[in-house]
Length: 110
Length: 521
Image 1 (cartoon, chains in turn orange, red):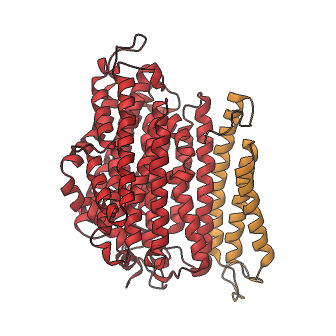
Image 2 (cartoon, chains in turn yellow, red):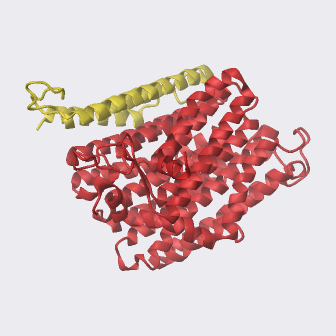
Image 3 (cartoon, rainbow over the protein chains, first blue to last red):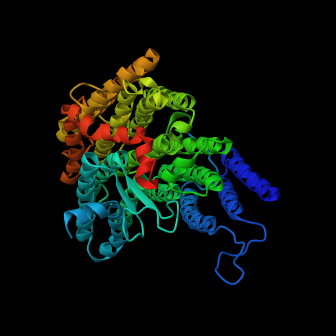
């Protein structure tokens, strides 16, 4: 088993979840979300990884290779994450210019 | 190009046409604004027509399978492989049913938008995102691949979040959009996490192939919890409903109507995961009770939160939460009884009620949000205390509002009554308390809409409001949904047996779903 990887995944996702729920600063909420995303992506990569495996490119010594599909999935997830980042930052810029702060002043209206 | 060819390729075309059109829209916008409006409406009408043809074929025949990138669209499993490795679109009764909702609401929202956003800037981008929302919804409803589901979920979320913030000059629009953005990204990450857990165990992404081998291990349970939590959050069920009022309220009215359909796409994903992916392998009693509990909480908390609201769209948003509860209750009762001997007697009726309520809700709640937008368009406020006497000048809007309000309260000639009656009758067999709460919620709903009707439409005419009715295109948008409400209300028997029953059947019969893609159930 590859415990260090899974522990890192668990740590990243937990820290991210804590940040999203507990922080009041919108920028910090968003950073926590990005942390979580990294954690989930790392999980997918870890699932497909074999210690000592090569890249899945056909050549002479094509005996042991890592699963290419999770890498394709993570690539897609990273691109999606980038669009989320772009949109969220745009929204934060507007929020800052409207309210002059990145904190929730009157608390979240749940 | 003949009809058969069109029908075979329609699942892919329905996603491809709006997707390509979405990115053509800004180009046409550069050339001519009127041409852009016409182009968007034509694309929405084409999508609606193809969807109706496809749905008709699915309801009268069998599910449509479309394998992306294969030489033969129905060959789901390539000859060199044992499992489906390509992205497979699977349009069964339930998918076609949801697709009809999405295209119809989009068409109404498209017409309505023509006048509603006329004075705004950046309309080219507005219509691009509107078409992308349609793509996201249809993609979620058609796909048979769980990672593809995640991708379309994100397409839908991003387009929705950007559109909620469309009127960014209102400070709270940006706030609502950011909240929606965070909530939906969080939900999507949970879905991706669950996909990772499932893929790690079974090396499969195709839902039908997964359903064939799934074993309900501890990891599967964790994945199920993540998926249910994420999709329940995205459809606004109560413990996770906090984003709904904020983002529904601030979005432009046609987008709010689209958001209702978008929430229902998530609801569809929730049902698809429970019924088709896990099916009888999961503990149907426990999961059924959890979904029923979510439904009851949503119904009751939603409607009680709606009562004291003074903002007309915020009030309606809480009602949207409350109505989602009915769908969860109906289908939850179905899930609770799945595989038990009572399923055929009233479990099926409960599922039909819950599924019928999805389309009814999309129609009347969409209509109510559009009338709220019409009021905002004229009086420039959403505060109920500052409006009154609108019935004097806005006759069509008044009639549309009355129809929508009576439908949501479940008054007989309209469609809400038919689906609610199905739910009351069947939930009563499980426990009378479920039906009692459902009826109580219905009564409070009526009370709440009587209040809105009285404060917005009755009384002396307002002095400072623009006189007259809203522009024609907005009336067309509302009329499309009203015609649906009246037709579904007058002929509920035909609708249930020809549209709703195939959808419920497709959801309940897991073997059919697996067999059509992965072969040999």
